[in-house]
Image 1 (spheres, protein in one colour):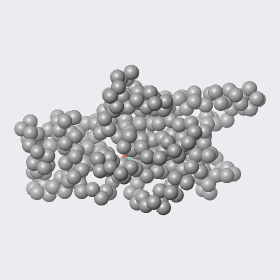
Image 2: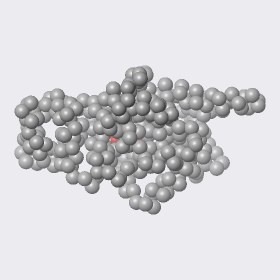
Image 3: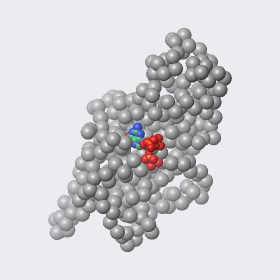
Image 4: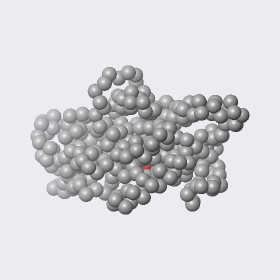
Length: 291
Ligand code: G4P
């Protein structure tokens, strides 16, 4: 999707719309990028979701370092947040997320059943910053048994519910919130992962940041893709970028080489990676997206 320019007016509108939609649902599904779970969270999501039931999906888990994802999941769970890894693109993890959402609603439905009220589908909306995979999630979850229900009273004009089997109804448009802006490092992380595509940052600045990270975390990936040697990696970052540029046959076109490097990293060509370091805490258990 194209980059949204987030001016204060747009942010206020996005917040208002998200809060309006939230009133209609039982559970808000907060979608973040597993490679940057904290950096891809909207700063106000806690406030916006208020006391609604909340589940967090760490999407694009296929592109993230699996151990870091487990650590992040365990961290969020230790904070009382239901968190799950997900691969919306191929649906891995979705069944587990659905089961978890049913469990979250069980007590409410049991209470209603005691009063003779029949169970109804669980109403969901998905919320998150651009490019974390919200539309992919919607398309994936409605792939089977999808039928659109009519507009319901009180629903924003044009807002439709997508029926997912007998158990869920999903608002067809996600709540889109703005990314974090306040910190240059977060900006670079968002740019490397593609959460913000056109950025005010220079491509070579982002590439230099990425080289710095990969030199430490995955030098083999850099060496393999750009035919670098161990001694190349001992040079400083601008020199490494020059070497990559020349190895790509791009002479001194550092901008083009930077773009290629970032594109390769976004697509996982250098291997999996997580840019947000999980808080230091023992990994309680390994958490993977189930089939
Ligand atoms: P949004 O609604 O939150 O803005 O995000 P959207 O679903 O448009 O997804 C943004 C990009 O992330 C898309 O790639 C999409 O395919 C990709 N994506 C979503 N979920 C996953 C996942 O689980 N794993 C991986 N690897 N990628 C995922 P794109 O390059 O913009 O489009 P396309 O080339 O896939 O069509």
